[in-house]
Image 1 (cartoon, one colour):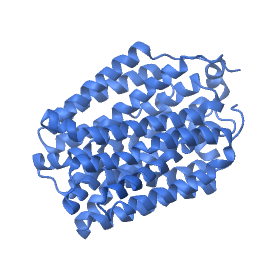
Image 2 (tube, helix red, strand yellow; image 1 turned 90 degrees about the vertical axis):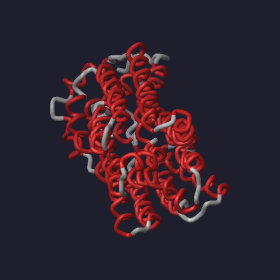
Image 3 (cartoon, one colour; image 1 turned 135 degrees about the vertical axis):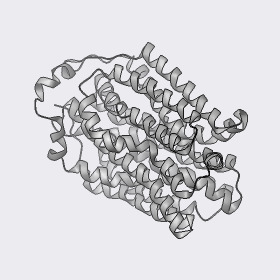
Image 4 (cartoon, helix red, strand yellow; image 1 turned 120 degrees about the vertical axis):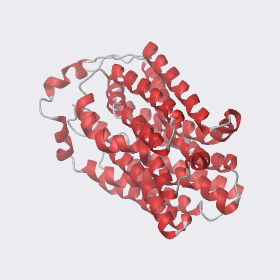
Amino acid sequence: MQSALSPYRWVILSLLGGAIASRILVGISLGILLPDITESYGLDAVKQGWLGSAMNLGNVVLGLPGAWLFSRYNPRVLLTLALGVSAIFTFAQGLAPAFLFLLAFRICTGLTFVSMSPARTLLIQQWFPLREIVLVNGINIAVVGVVEAAGLTLTPYLLVALGSWQNVMYSFGMLGMATTFTWLLFGRQQISEQTAAAPLAAPASPMLILLRHPVLWVVALGHSAAPGFWWAYATFWPTYMLETFNMPLTLSGLLFGLTSLGMAPAGLFFGWACSRRPALRRPVLWGCGLGLSSTAIAMLFTDSVPALFVICLIGGFSWGFNAVISSIPYELPGVQPREVAIAASFIWTTGSLGGLLGPTIAGMLIAQWQNTALALGVLASLALGVSLCGFALKSPQPTRA
């Protein structure tokens, strides 16, 4: 029996969106700040790739054990701690006296977000019925798209206004602290009969869900290629456009931001459409994988602003597939709340693995081949893995156990 729906659930969803935004800005700004960071520390392409990968390391190493551990505890408290500690490490990045310190602080920033995924998953299950999950994830994807686009567009101007990349990091740290206090004041839990009884209903280890549902492995591995190529582009594409076409960072940041902005209407549309007609989910994944790969490759061969505007916007629209991928753990037959947290963390852990390997591999290939376009193009072709997810997807179950 589900508790009566409360309008306050939309306040919770807004606060969760703010929590996601605080992480995004710290990660997404690196590509824009990288030329100044390189000048500060004298970095080569390999070290640049390490910086681009650093924030994903924590989730790759601790994502699954973290989900198993943190799904036992109060998600409101977990989210408060994750936001507060990450803000402190964001300040520390601006204070880093050398490259290794900056790398370590970025890794630590990523580690603090390990508890965010299970906390968010548990809170969504507490506040939203299953029929709204795809729509909720579509809204979250839209928030991610808007924040990423705003970050990529405004960071160059923020850099000019504040005078150094260190001051930009300080400003992100202040924003992180404001987000922490806002969640502390207004964030709540809602314990329904289902979530209260869940520990008794599922005495076995929730990790076993990964063995009972092989589809999770197919979806996770296919999905991981998309963050891999995107983080490589976020790290190296602005610098590539500056060196190859003499395109200023303010313009390349604006254009690359469209790959995120297009995700906003796509997430809302696909979330709404797939919640009404589940049969659309497989075609959405097929089309989005093809769109991601083709547009990313096209971004390497032109400096035409109108052409790049259209290409990046279509590429961003192709990221709407995340509304479908994010909903799969909630719709598995007989799934319990902690199992959902494990399954969701598993999918996003493999996504973080792609984000970890993408910039690192790109940096190594650039150093080896001395050809940035070829290295990025090879990684972009792997986004077709999203299309493969569509072949493994089954029709969702109408109810949760």
